[in-house]
Image (cartoon, rainbow, N blue to C red):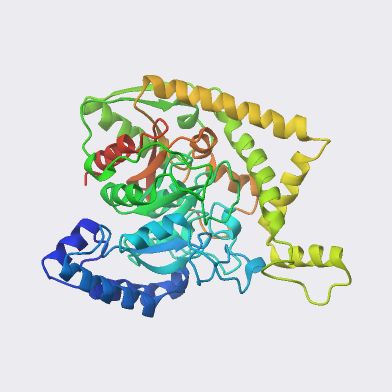
Length: 473
């Protein structure tokens, strides 16, 4: 089995007997053993379990009863429930906790004979843009010894990047799949909000959280999406829109109308090499006959503050359940109930999570609710309407995924500087529409550059076809 094989290549090898499912799992386990001590992408490895499942699936393949994902080895971010396996959300507050059930998205993978090989490291409670906020030490980008992989789904991205699995599930609240995909040189898909059930996903910001997919190819992402998407009796917010057969719709038909946003390419935070790689790709699209134009998006500057006001507010509510009473960490010998709450949360939460809880509590308070939270909700609707207006007249909106390539560990000491890593990804999250990051080049240090494409709600089939076209596979 070759390194970084696509799932179609793996299935071909399984079907013609070149290797077995056990061989596939053994390949990834060898890579995990060799690379994970340095990269810290996985917190748990389910080696014996994965090998056992591989033997079961090998028998199913011989009998002709294997599911459509037989041979697909997957890792899952440490915010997704997997029954009788650890769930810690990258935090000390959940020390010793094991999931009581399996997330719907994970269950659907398993039902089609995918193999879960491990649990990925991530920023604590998915709050971060570099995967440095984990209670279990940072994740390292496989392309550079001292580079971050992006966040918060950095461990999931690195697992695919470093050939520790074929596909990984992450989550994207404001760019946490797309930005790591850009930093790690792989494909990262954020579907439409509500396209995938959130049942079994530890909540950060409930009106933004989306389960996303990391892969090497658009075809792999398409196949996984068609398996895990769709309505779910356990999630009242999931869409009942029919789920297309995405894997059969990967051909980009005809010339497309595409726009890019003036406020992104003229932004002072945009790195020159990233800007040039993006503009070169724009020229390639024009040369191929696509209609590409520059447009203005006046509300662009409000997307980031709107996102952080609303997500911190939702986080302050969602994370109130981690109080030392029902599960997870409880402080030793508290004097009274109030002291137990305070000390358990102070000891269990890291600085970034505590900061966002405090910010969210402030914007929800009686003094600031109208001035911040209510106003941000109104701006969110305006951003959504303006972006949807662009998408009414264009097939895709494109922009750089991130303003820079992967930066050095510890180099972003200022919170605002770190938050700017989400500058170009939060727009699609605020609007709830699908977006994808596709690698388009490397900078002078060899670090990956990603292009982000955005489409109308529930038009993932068009987005995946465009991704395949951009990547040429």
